[in-house]
Image 1: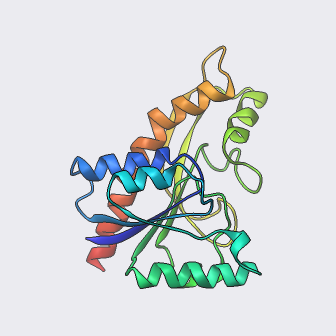
Image 2: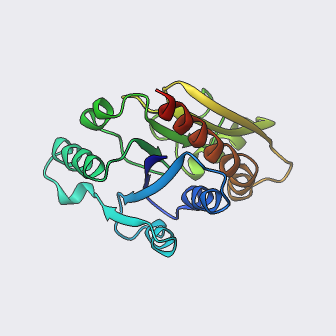
Amino acid sequence: MVNTAVLVSGGGTNLQALLDAQAAGSLPHVQIKLVVASNPNAYALQRAAAAGVETAVCSARDYDTPAARDEALCRLLQNHGIGLVVLAGYLSMIGPKVLAAYPDKIVNIHPSLIPSFCGAGYYGLRVHEAALAKGVKITGATVHLVNENYDEGRILAQKAVAVQDGDTPETLQRRVMEQAEWIILPQAVEALAQQLEQT
C-alpha cells in the first residue's frame, strides 16, 4: 500500500469520501497516513481524528516565507514516508520543493470540467458562480496531477454533472460533490496508487 497524505483547508468533504472509501475496502493500494491542514481550524482535522488518522497543521502564518513553509511541508511528508499526496480542498499553492520531491505523485480535485472555470481565483463557490453566470448546461469535476501552475497538470479523471434550472451556487456545488467529486477522487487515487506500486 502507498502511504498517502491528504492536504486540506476547510470542511473536508472530499477527505471524508476518501476515508469512507478506505473503510469500505475500496482503496486496497492506499493507506491514508496523514492529514495536513493549511488552516488550524479546518473541520477536516476533526474528520481525520475521528478516523484515527494522524494530523498536522502547516499554516503560512507560521513561516516567514513561502519557501520556509514549502521546506517544512516537504520534511513533514517525507518524515511520514508519504508516497502520494492528495489535495482535497487545499487552497494553498504547492511549492517547488514539494513538487520536486513528488513528481506526478500529487493529485488535486477541481469542481469543474477543466479547462473551464479553473486557474487562479477559481475555487469553492466561485467556480459554481462562474458556471451559472456563463449559463453552461453541463459542469462536473476533474482530478488532475499537480504542477507549478493552478489546475494545469495532466487530467486523470473527469465526470460530468447536469446544471438544473433554478440552481444556486450552493445547490450546484452539492450536486457536483455528490455526483462527481466523491466518486472520481477515490477512484483516481486508487488507480494512481496501484500504478505507483507497480513501478
